[in-house]
Length: 399
Image 1 (spheres, rainbow, N blue to C red):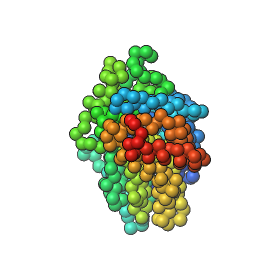
Image 2 (image 1 turned 120 degrees about the vertical axis):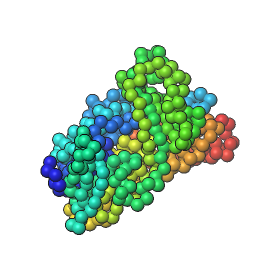
Image 3 (image 1 turned 90 degrees about the vertical axis):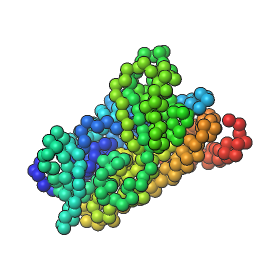
Image 4 (image 1 turned 45 degrees about the horizontal axis):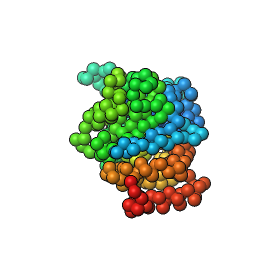
């Protein structure tokens, strides 16, 4: 790649969102630069729904486990099993999964570069100059530079592209997530099921989020999250490992990072920059699910930027957020309200876990997860759930 080469689109960040956008744009015939920090693995439970597998052409070999149920555990150690009837939750290892996505984008024509984004400056002709520090370059080496007609910032929750280009990007609320990848012990030696996700709602392990044990075949993700500064995430994970007999399991690596829990009010700069994935804040509140929403955001960003490159009309960039929020905005709002209320105290967590025993709740929860939309086909079930929730909110139902 020649210094100063001009691309149609520069995608900053090669996670699921950026790699998806780069792949779609390259397949459409545009010249694409994919700039990514090589070697970074995002802390993530790694859960993906079948809809993601189908919509984004994910091969079966990337699924390291198929989860058939979830166990929800309350502060008083009451548990509820939620079987998935006729479906599954796929589990992926993010180091392998993300690299496969980047390789696919490169195979379809995107030019991969390993480095760290530094600055973006717009020229008089409307193109942007992107500077970056190449991976392995000496600290005093000059920065590399390329030019692009459009830029997609998919560089994570603390997006440098967003903070340089999009007003209000610094105001997104975060949960700080931490997990430990451990070697899966032999069956019968610890409290886990290789086909079940365990989710713990307990203020001692997270005062405002949840903790988890997600099987990944030969490994497991054990983690927690919180927005409370000073709360010991590492200590909470240690407590969870001790509680479940996993304290002695071999630790392979430890990872932590901020995770946004609210979409930004604006994803573009009105000129030629558009955000996607965590940079745009598209991680679901309450659940922390992000891979599907990141990849969808990347696809919508690619559509919007492709239209911008064809027409030169910056208004096309707005369509990415508009399309995303039209379908998923109501879900994010409901999940946000749920997290604020039900995760507030251990008494409410106990009630929340009790609600999860309800078969209507379980069915609608899994339907919404599998289909990624509010389920409207069972109105009577929604009515029943409404009145059950009302009883719990008013204390008429016992914990």
